[in-house]
Length: 388
Ligand SMILES: Cc1ncc(COP(=O)(O)O)c(C=O)c1O
Image (cartoon, rainbow, N blue to C red; front, side, top):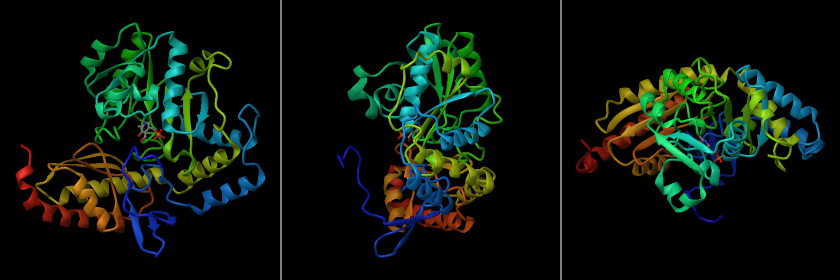
């Protein structure tokens, strides 16, 4: 691999549910550090594995220009969890592609090319999606290549009102910012974003690449907020671990795209759709959204109960949880890894947990206890670094 990101000092040959195994059989717990939000349904879920095996032997690939029963079944199941005003889906291969599709559809629907996103946002790394990704480290070298984005603070309705003009194609929001440190968009702000966008003839795009599929304790984080986005982007766990993205939109938005205006070679392949169909069955039958809600509450309560002076805040929704530290998170992530716990960073000071949604409470409790011990041991050494 080209090393545009650092490699972890561990390698796995097998996974099952929330566990990963090295070649010598040593087991690690995946709290998100190995799966980056892809393993909502756990690693190698037997039901999803069986669906992949069966479909691979039957028909792995045919272009999405050819109708396919397995794709139809997957889309039917997907649209059962999407809001009913979302009538069409374009299937692609990743979250960033789902955002590219969202930007292109917003541009064709509105005839505009300016966008507004949130400070702290992460929408991907291809050149369109990168435009909506906030962190200068990601965007700076490519600034001249990305579309015209303005950033406003999350949950700041007045700033959004000021930024959205009649030249804006769409407002982009993550219901919970993943990379941005687990900041949660309020229901009111999501409704305000819809109102402000529509008042100016712009669209609301909600990026559920990380928050979707049960992660926040709902099938989609947008459910129950009262906001009606024009476009919803999905990815990550949607196909149970195979590469996938989905740009889901209203019929009106879909109708504005001219023939040939957007396309894909691999998107919507029978193999990925079979995996996605099984994944959506698992989501429903194992009541994973409900379990994520309960386990997430349990995890946040346990993290707060640590009472560590190094913990500034515990944030998130469902099993999308961030611990904002008063010290840098990387040494804590390294210490967790040495205890065979794979968590994730989110900005310089946040330890992020995105475990499989069915992870047993005992594993969450053990992880919190280990984190508590690590924070205690780092408290003294780090005291010089403690921020105000
Ligand atoms: C909210 C959000 N949007 C988009 C993306 C990009 O997805 P991908 O890495 O599959 O391109 C990510 C990836 O982390 C994400 O968290």
